[in-house]
Length: 118
Image (tube, rainbow, N blue to C red):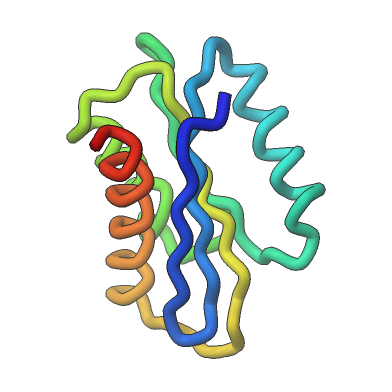
């Protein structure tokens, strides 16, 4: 179930974060596949989830630990279980650099959670 959505544009790259409540791992694949169908021009779909004792994360072809780990850490920090965050990235033609990329994914994950909680 979609709980919240947050959008951010940095140097013409558009980042759209989605926060979902999930009940099983099968939902993770279904949600990501649906987002890929709905956002055919997007280049990256990094995600992270926590479901009881199971967890998963992916940078989806972004530099190592620049996306999935940032998303996962926000789920841990906010003590969210049974949740999935997927951030859809439309590349704007300008490379952000590792530091900016890391901060952008962190900001998107943080805001999609905090805007839902408040």
